[in-house]
Image (cartoon, rainbow, N blue to C red; front, side, top):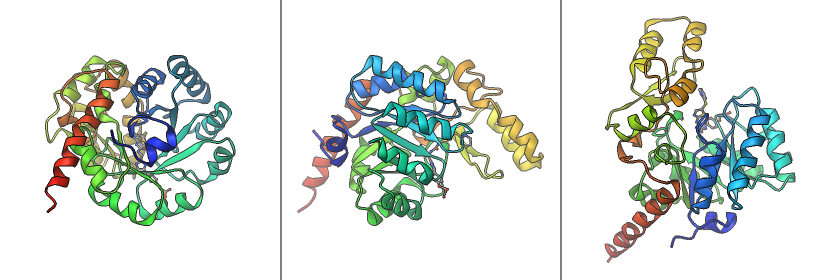
Length: 314
Ligand code: TUI
């Protein structure tokens, strides 16, 4: 049993968060993770408040345990969703892709534990000062929108500048990753890619199959030129996008090419036009299995590794 300030603070069995993956992490997946003893997180992505409220209620119909909502701060609906999570008094709000300062006061007044993703030391200091309950340090091995630093160098730097518990994310898909994260000073982990293979994850079967069959060099970062780098699986779409990006396609056309690409991957499994967001650790994800089993398995794998390391100390 691994108990940290995260398990204690949230009243959860395992310090494992399921990443808030846009278009993917719905009430069903989040409830399955929370029922399994981790923290399930509904992704607001680019969806309106009505969707988020419905998914919160769908999750609550399946589990009495705490759930979280991730707010993607670049969303045109971010203000609306920020109000919905306060009205619904969700246990945890995580944020991504930006600075959530303007919402902090209202969320704290609603009794919400705010756990932002921070991709830099400056943001970690600011969030600590504004009342965050914990911090998620997400390295660029992750899928989707990626920061500059790797998990290995980001986590210890965040741990050094904040007294808050830190959750490591990016590149973690099994017990080895969990053990390594704890060694870096983290008190929990967040995994996205590993949960793409969960039975309760409703992505198109072709998406799941691509993840389970992925190999070491299967992901690529696109979108650097427009300032929104995104990691996804190498596909005919990502190849075409990279050619356009580095071939000088005008910004507006490049943006149009990406619009709707995530939905096409998630709902249609369309490799020609879809963008299959995934972290580098897809190569460590080998089979479909229930979400609860994933949560338990990674933590049970980590325990003997931590004990083995302790035995090396003379
Ligand atoms: O947010 C994510 N991952 C995402 S969001 C997303 S949807 C999207 N699609 C296309 C373009 C952009 C977004 C897909 N995947 N992860 C959390 C994360 N947050 N990673 C890095 C950051 C981050 C970056 C900058 C957090 C704070 C930050 O602060 C910038 C500032 O305002 O100073």
